[in-house]
Length: 357
Image 1 (tube, one colour):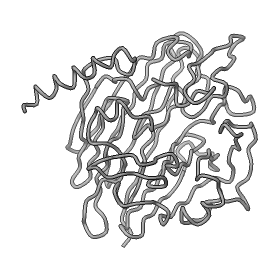
Image 2 (cartoon, helix red, strand yellow):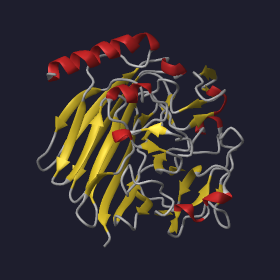
Image 3 (tube, rainbow, N blue to C red):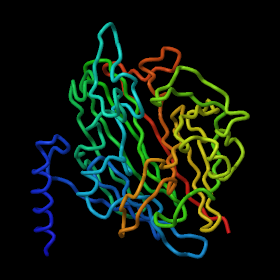
């Protein structure tokens, strides 16, 4: 079957889904960034990272993020595999907030609350490809999206961009930008790769070692909405200030890790976390400009058929989503996520991969 026929079939499928409001056009593609034996694939459907190929200590190359084989599966999924999250990442309690005296009612998509920007958000729209350089000294891809006033209930028009770039050696940078055009609006962007440094099909991540540079978390209620507190991790199962296996204390938590951490450093580009998989030797060191990171252990990934037919289960990956304070619009004591008209939000993340033999 020719590539033209395949593209037409994808288009017909996307058009069939337009009535559901999940997608807005047919210009969906997969874009590879490549630098030697390091490669990343991204789709402009939801600005998703769909694969990251890295060598291990024996030179074997594996894909270290969970996902699917086809774009169709990303359109239908509800787990945000690799997706860009916005206009506001994480949860907004009661699916509403008050800004400058106006109550904004959002579209709920997790009980009575809104998560990751609503049922459509930025994860289920087609982004425009603004610039693409596959390889060479600076492989990069820039995607853009215009979020309209009232989209998912949020005020104001916002122009959003994200740039993925490969840097030496084995570094992936992600730069988010968003400009509020005509109204004040909350903006807090992130993305949601499900990492398994042993390989996407290598089983659970309980033996992988994690260090998170955060002395505090934001506690939540039974609906996982922040209470407004900022609590120390000391003497709790959430303490990863020193490197620990993911599974060392996970059974002391009801389901698994799903919590926002407040990072310690006040530097603009600050250390976030380090993940190490002894079996493969792969190490991932994360730095970011955001004040927080959400640590999640794929607790709700149950019998999910992924790449190559491999079935993903709970704790088969971990996510470290750098972000602003969750539900900050409803907690005046949290640093604000409001961006005023004419101002630009920015957030940079750097993933540095290495091998420990």
